Image (cartoon, rainbow, N blue to C red; front, side, top):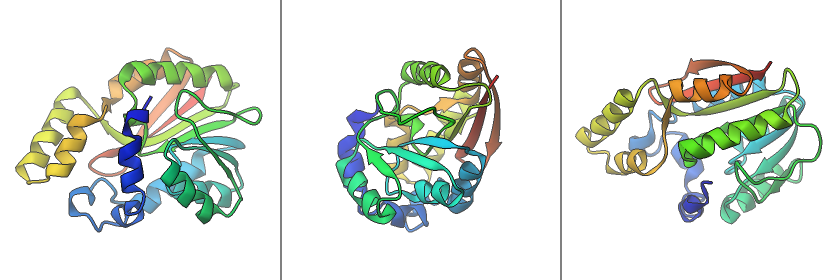
Length: 212
């Protein structure tokens, strides 16, 4: 459920905001157009939002600015602490993860950026089925994450990172559970969603799935 990465999240919490603005060359392309990715994700959300992987609260800020009511879910104590300070009580940030979380009413949108890859594909399928049970017709899942058009594209990304000498990025790509558009499309459509994918940079796509 992604909790095996909590130590990594805690370690990254102090430097995450520097990484997303491009200070780490290995992750520069991963986070290219970061602010636009957050803006697009927030613009697609509606009503009462459950946000997974709040991190330091950057997307949460955008969601609040767009008028959404937000419950944030974040398993890392260090990340939660930073987010709570940044948000100043405007949104509640709770301990939890993609599969175990508390909601405070009828959910209209599930959102996340840069986090769904912490679940195995089997867990992703379970999560999508769970979200479908919460959402009414017109409800949404909006996730921005590193996704690949095929397994071959994923393997090429690892090889390219290694060739460039990007050891941290290559290790990340091998260690975590990055998936493909065909896999997600099948999982979402089989649970009653109409889904579209929008490419944002060399790594990240935004998926918008609307309950039919």
